[in-house]
Amino acid sequence: MTDFYPLKVARADKETPDSVVLQFDVPQELKDQFRFHPGQHLTIKSTINGEELRRCYSICSAPSEDNLQVGIKAIAEGRFSNFAVNELKPGDELEVMTPQGHFGFTPSSDRKVNYLGIAVGSGITPILSMLKTALESEQNSTFTLLYGNRNAHSMMFKNQLLGLKNRYPNRLHISYFFSRETNEVELWNGRLDGKKLRELGKELFKWSEFDACYVCGPEEILESCYTALVEGGLGEENYHVERFNTATKSKEKPANQSENTQVTLKRDGRIMNIDMTSQDDSLLDAALRQGVDLPYACKGGVCATCICKVKSGHVEMGTNYSLEADQVEDGYVLSCQAVPTTSEIEIDFDV
Image (cartoon, rainbow, N blue to C red):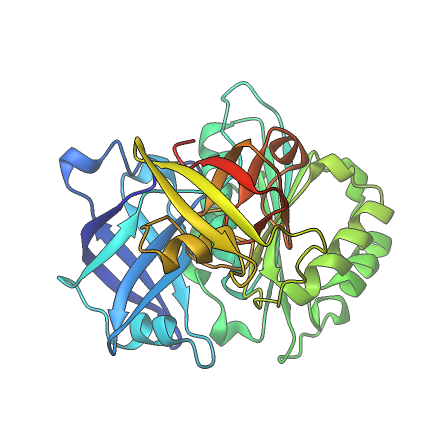
């Protein structure tokens, strides 16, 4: 169930001058709904200057810590992120959706995994949750973190990472990279991207030795990171990615898009019927236009908040950054990207 619940901000701690960690006060009766796996995210809804905004932020706390925290870094012209960093305070209330997302893993105490985490900027937030969980729950696992920032001053969770390094000196290995700060060791200078990973693969690491790799950062570095790691020996099946700050691209509609489609949709056990025309950009847009309240956040094919399953008929997606191939094969689609190619379709959001 993907519902919003009103949660009060319990803490709003400045992590750096342009970032904040929000901790939510989750009532006892909602504890089960807000249980999460490391790597998942929250969708937050708020009205700012009369406009409803929805944003996704990764959970940075570990499930064992019994608190719910997200890390937010202000971005240029980011209306919600700047509001959160500069104005939110304890006692304020936000609408928060239950945890979503398939990035990350479910820990197992008998596993021995050599993890690699690559984070750039606020991409550290889901990686931190996974790192803490792996080290605490899997006593035989190790974690190598490559963490890129502009400089040390802008680095989120610096003290927390130092504490974890002291606690797990033989199982946690951290390398820091700064694009706008010079280090005496040239290898640590510059942007953490595919080029840097190729250098590291020659000088320091064997990518083939890692059992699982989790990467989170801005869109522009992800393709080069994937290429460098796989060419360096990392198994393709071991590469997992979460995208941040992905710009919404204009969708090129399929040539065989249906001019008019009768859509039957199921949401919260209710059956509704809507009409979609070729003027609608997606199934989600058609439903919202007709007053149907559906779950969504990014509208860019990234967060998977709007996931649904096609029960009959056929659709095509413009962009898909979040669904695995087997999910698509099973009929799951992102409603923000889905365009019908048949005159009738049936979709289910209760999945």
